[in-house]
Length: 119
Image (cartoon, rainbow, N blue to C red; front, side, top):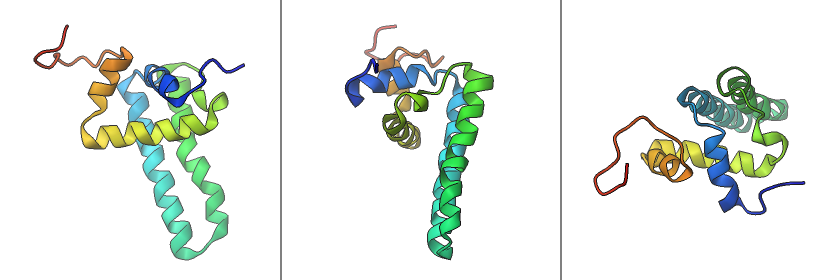
């Protein structure tokens, strides 16, 4: 049975499962590669490349869970929410909002708290 019944409840859990910065880096690599392969499939109109999109995206993520984070990927229990959360995490990183999201989820970032925030 699934523990999380909404994406908003799942999101902090997802961030805690990606607490190590290198885990997130490898997820970003996979996310960018998956997007690149998808674009390549569209440009070349090669449907076979579509099979490589999930492989490109998940390979680096799953390796990082095995060797960096040492936990089970949330994808196995929450496949759609994990996919959405992966790109949300990537977008938050690109827009500079990830540290705030990590703070809210209780993930230590190693950075000094912003003024007005409790330590």
